[in-house]
Figure 1 (tube, rainbow, N blue to C red):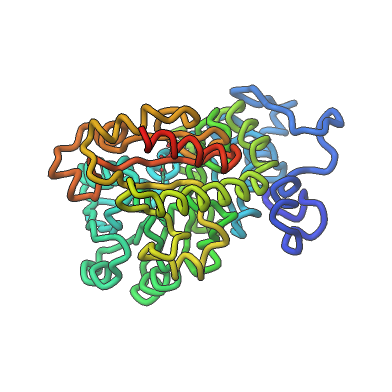
Figure 2 (tube, rainbow, N blue to C red; figure 1 turned 60 degrees about the vertical axis):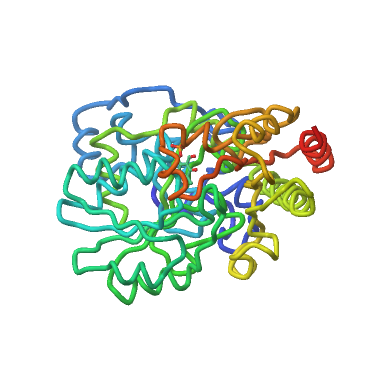
Length: 402
Ligand SMILES: Cc1ncc(COP(=O)(O)O)c(C=O)c1O
């Protein structure tokens, strides 16, 4: 059951985004004639007789064997995510980091080198530098969107160029055409973690990038109630990744898959509101006298506004900003004065969330290490949910006036 056309109603390519989010990857008639896909809560799958085992091993019968290698619902979710991303195949994981780690472990070996833009999720940086480093893989960190520096560190041993776009939490936007062209010219594969953008706002494969990675925990599932990750790309190129997932078990669980599938039904609608709220909040903050700087690619003042406008449909719900003349404690008071967004890590859910990066994600960094990666005492990251934009703005106004 690998082909999209066997189960997608109609011609998936001709369908709009929201139609794909609702229908792509799903069988029209489901087990038990159920409207929704059933949750298969099973560790193993049984065979009628030995002949059935042999036919399965000969790949004559498409079916499941053992939970670490697959689950019928996993296939539905993977087909839907591949359709949304416009890719051949998707592989689902138990978390975004499981997708990142399994992908890198499958593709790299001792002596290989990768180039990573330095503005990125701190665990991705940690996995590349500290974990892969122990196995003889060398990571070159170069300043985000510095394509000349990226080219300059490439050697014959470079196997992968990796970046986020937009980056977290600085919201820098990679020129994907340029990024993919470097990879093609130098014979190196390219991967983009587009978690902040989602396929609604950005489709990296269309710009020539080889792989797209997402933390499904965020906008794709959208309800702050599960963890998941996905990688999308060419089926053949992803085969080693799928095989390694079966070896190390970085799979998604049945309930998480269900929550993701359910969340995806309203994905396009939610993204419209996240985009609207992100832009409205960013515009409000940009005009506010107590704000020093706003990082949001939908603002003309953002250094990557032109690239973002050219490549993205919307700019998402994440807004990072600096409070003017505030130290860490004063900034924390702004966070604590907010009534609507709750304080917590993560983003992309229907509920707004807020965090002060020096405290939430970078507490184990020294001040010098934080400055080196552009994390400041007066920085706040706000994930706009799908509440009314006026309510979010009113809440920010009262918090900043305190
Ligand atoms: C850009 C990005 N990629 C990957 C991850 C990791 O995802 P997960 O928390 O689902 O493992 C995160 C988490 O915040 C992220 O922000």
